[in-house]
Length: 334
Image 1 (spheres, rainbow, N blue to C red):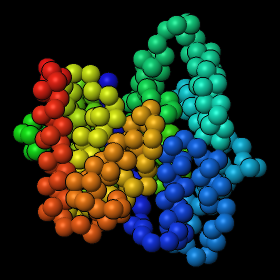
Image 2 (cartoon, rainbow, N blue to C red):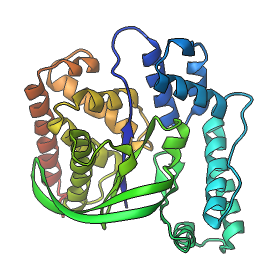
Image 3 (cartoon, one colour):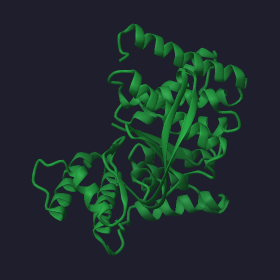
Image 4 (cartoon, rainbow, N blue to C red):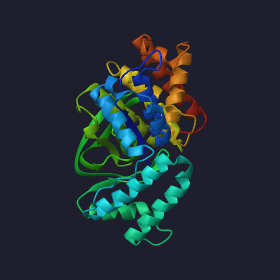
């Protein structure tokens, strides 16, 4: 089992629906695996008023997912390229026709089995991983939220480190990943504005380094090391946590330690909210924001941007500790 951390590049928003607000909403729709809605939201934006980064996002989304678009997979040069082309075709179809998501996943399965000559009923993920590894690459398969995932990279450096969390300190092995051929479906769905920043397995923490400015800055520490280390600790401590519960607890840890990165952390949560537990990040975002606002007696989650920082951090820590006590009392600890 693994847990994914999303890293999203946003500009803080407040007040009425400015172009930045609309871009945030469109990014949230794309992360809910609905590029059709994202493009609809972006239709009325005048790109002349946008920053270079925003303009690139809007133009790419319209081109990639607009009504006259078609999937672009490039010319396959290797088995890895052919596998990625099949995944991108699946992502495109599932994102532009979300009501056919289940059908598109079955088509993905059929095409991959035909390419890899995999027998019916065999688990495809280890077969894909083995085929990609023969070409000198590493890969991540499985599911991230609502869609099937494939990330591919060729460089990996490993290092042990110790991370202090609200409930203790644990040594973890961190795998630093670089030279990506695919950043996964969230990157594809948002034209690179949002993407997986890392994940956790029993083997340690995996950091997608191109998504961070530096391994030394607070954003990397808070949104990757602290977040993913909490996943690692929770998996060892508690039984059968749901994916959204893992995310809920790790996001509380982010708020506990975010100082200069508070606006980025909150903006990511506010932009990507949802009511479907099948999309664990979005579901956890909404619950974290709601619980923090309630604890601090705020009427709107956006008031968390300007709430006293020490009170906000203390509230996040207290909610996490209360959650742990309730789980221990319910017999959920191992």
